[in-house]
Amino acid sequence: MSDTSARVADSTGNWVDTLAPQWARPYLRLSRFDRPIGSWLLLMPCWWSAALAAGIAHDASRLPLTIVLFFIGAFVMRGAGCTWNDITDRDLDDKVERTRSRPLPSGQVTTKQALAFMVAQALIGLVVLLQFNRFAVLTGIASLVIVAIYPFMKRITWWPQIVLGLAFSWGALMGFAVTFGRIDVTALVLYGGSIAWVIGYDTIYAHQDAEDDALIGIKSTARLFGAHTHQALILFYGLAVMLIGVALASGDVRWPAWLGLAAFAAHLAWQIVRLRIDDPLLCKRLFYSNKHAGLLLFAGLLADAAMRAA
Image (tube, rainbow, N blue to C red):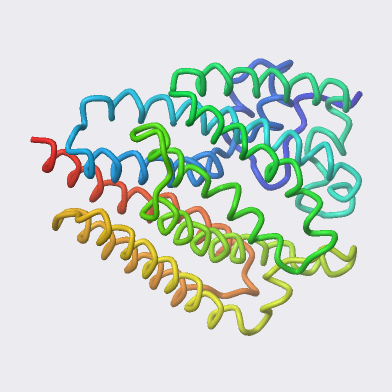
């Protein structure tokens, strides 16, 4: 077993490195609590749909509790998903400069320990899920199929980002499942818009590893689009804004939601203008900035829900 205090190459100087007990550090790194951006990105469609559904229902009384439960659920389930991803990718991660210092390939934890930790996180997620109605519980459980197959997609398709989008956008369905006990067309269109957003931002993320991925045969939309990435982002980010806009129109939202969507669209446009695919650090910063893009849209939807519930 290697030193559990050893840092992960692409995430240093964070609270896990400086404040967490040494024994807990490998597990916190497995669940990515040292870099929670993925949890935030998983959470955004959950919060969007919860706020949109509350606005449609003209009832925001349960929205604060739903927001809190989605927050907890997103963080623990993203942690479980990352742990599963690291278990399946432990041999590949050892061949990539950015990932070879992660807890499994570096020997900070064993595969059995990682599996036990994954189950513990999933059980916490189940406790959160059981606070909702039966339809929402079944809808949440159904997402696990996509989560389970995602790590293998980059071995067999150039479009693993689509599968990631299916998984990371599932929250767009959950808000409606929790609020109405059903999934309607508005939820499905919001889901489609979120998937397009995920494909866009994860393409930016994947450009950090494009060279290493090419050497070991890992497929991604970053490698597929290559020099045409900017055009691809215009397509997918544009599709995201259009579909989310259709969902908002279907939900008969008021002006705060449209203002949030405009701010979201402007942020995505800024990312495209700024992007340089040969600059890994810039790709990382732009990828991280999608948290702010998502929060801008959520702020508009939350204000809309409050206005309609008043």
